[in-house]
Length: 407
Image (cartoon, rainbow, N blue to C red; front, side):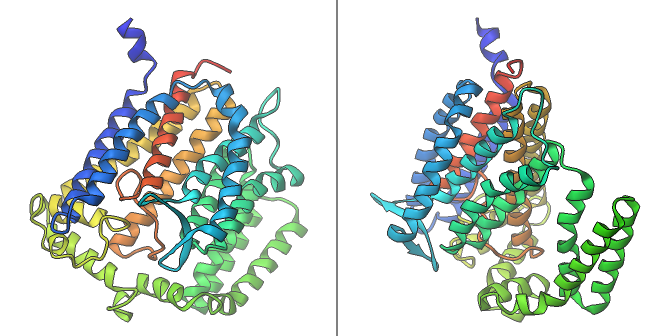
């Protein structure tokens, strides 16, 4: 009996999730040690509740999750609309409902709902996934992302919007999107990055894009149109960049030179790099980090929680945390391969994409190689909505393992 019980549990996701949660709780306790235990107590309470939810979700059969996916998606869209009218404005963004001293962020749960609805749409065929290389199917799939993104941009919340956009391409590629189409979609990003660095880099980016496109040996007319479009995007970058809000421009500039605004957008990055650098190989020890304990980094327990790990547990602790996340991502992708259920397979890829995007952006923010856009570290940063949403994702990932032999 015990053997069959443990055979149905994805012990890898369960144990690694518990380790990350524990590290997060220690980090939040340290970051708030001199100012009270409210954040730690809330995080601990909802972590315990979230673990129970995660285990419960892992037992729900995939057909039930799939049947409820569209309803869940519709409800989250309604919540995203309501928060624009009745939400609480924090740091310039109307993204939260305030209830009984707690803040609930609908966009965090919309991530799960969007992935599940998209997975249901793509997998509802008898002989395989829908053909996303067909323009109409591709556009319908993109609409599942565009709707919540449009509402979230109204809050406005650029960081969360980018999270939604980050999952569409991995999911579509997983279900059969042509590498040629994938590169066409990604090529403007390369060109824009080159244009940001300067004219010479822009020209190099265009040449690289053109060479790769011609290597695909596809329709010459389409390839030429894509190249012309990229040139147009590159030339229009300057005007688009200046349409960004001043604080957004400063955050991007701070990636390349934090000292350009040392007391503003670059302040957190500078202090975070000091904290991580001062930790050395093994760290200063728990509750011994000067940057953390003296509050040099505002609200460190949220988006900059990772630099506490670097300061108090050093390079070894920082790498250990990264390894744990890599295991989670690998296991979610592995479960996508293992499960015979197409709906859960697509869902796991979506969850893995979100965890990876959060990890890269958040850690990149703390070490100064990514713009500061308010992306929490999964399962570690303080925040009820983020914590519960990621635990639900882990629960569905565990469900993919439990029901891996069911179609």
